Length: 350
Image (tube, rainbow, N blue to C red; front, side, top):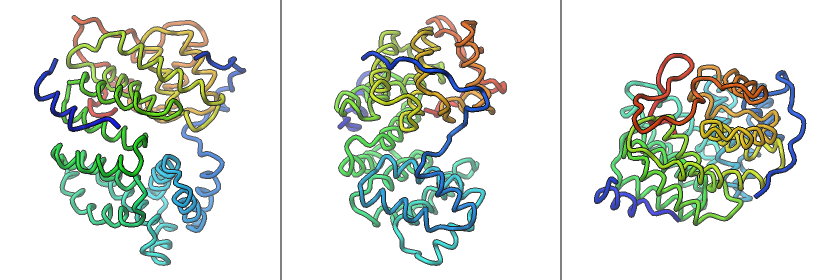
């Protein structure tokens, strides 16, 4: 387990496998953004009809089987769906107001709704009771604690409080990817520009995790944060390559077009393009298949699917990629990479 306490302490004292054979690529009209898996898809269809039962059964099943990573993903997607279609959630609340799965979706939804507001910190304070209620639903469940970690970042919580939440989360699931990403994003906010500390945390977490754990891709997530930020002390090229190599080894453990590692493969492809490792990036493109994910492309463009398609076209043609995928800046270069829509990539978006 990576220690946040050690990381904060060190930051105060010093600022200083082969891939599967590629298959045929899907056509442009066969590529979809954030396509749900076979368990989530019928649940969303039912929610669109106003039925909450399939969502309740899906989440109850993940809780009973301790499928915490899947549970986390489904909670995210159900809360996102409820932002525009919430009738099913209201009916669920009327039928079973104390259902721990309902409470978790409601807590995630409340955090999501507060996040874009200029009054985010104030709005998030009112969400705390929802998160507490969700955490009491099942003492084994780390997902409410992941929500609490995101909540703490959004409400500008101090690192001692965040550390307490982190320790509670990893007691329940030491290698939960969602909690590790939440911690990495908090560190990127708290130590803005100190990407070395973020890499230290990500590398230690990956070293401690099983070889097939998604946490193996955490250094690649830290690498994206560094490349998207474009500020702070330079991270050595060797460290970026090592992060990519670790994620490549993880990707090789899963079948092509598997939705489980899709986000990791999308981020890895972007990282490999930025490192000018074009053949390795093309190999990940084959493995991604039709499974395009919003991250990291939505950090680069208002049209994530279109941006992915542009990078894919350049990889297939062997031509120069879009401006956001240019080689790494030299130590003397300045400024952040520009997003396709003209703005800068937010520094906190890990």
